Length: 222
Image (cartoon, rainbow, N blue to C red; front, side, top):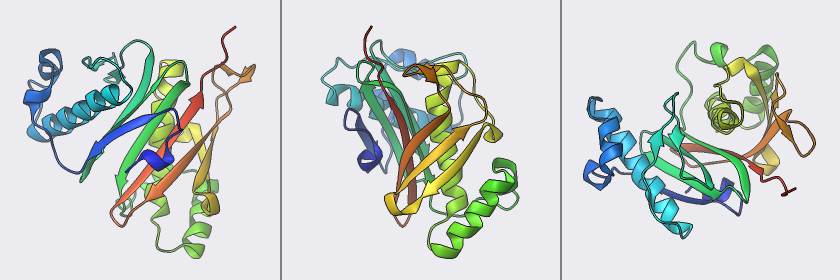
């Protein structure tokens, strides 16, 4: 379902249901031993999707453990991202030789809870969302903006080693092309010979889901 917003070099595996924990590697099961049932289901299913994405790339399937901030630790030579929400679990993966970083997110196609939009948007974004809602009222733009920022943060964190705040990126949507630009308040590491100042991404939707993805192509070998 998320393939249309991914770069051609990436593969994805996703599902609307859940997979049993028995499909996990023992080291993965140990990570959720004390978690609540919902967290166990989310984690297990997203990890099985990650395993299937590895297989789709023609790689041996290896466990996907967690880094110090709880982020997935992908097998050497790959970059990836996982996401889960009600009715959707998915993983995307690419070879590091083709893609420097990758972030995906899925959200229910519903408005954000009352009071949430103000915490995740700046005044310019709120004006942008009002304009979009007036022109395309069938889309819940506030939730789509939240999803876009989540995808950006998942791509940003592996490059910088820290998780941004919602105020660290300003998102602008381009509805005609189903793309968006996320301008970074603090420039990141160099990419293509200059500091990374923005991500571009793509989005799609169904009646029930909003899906977003961002990626950076790999830098040429020196």
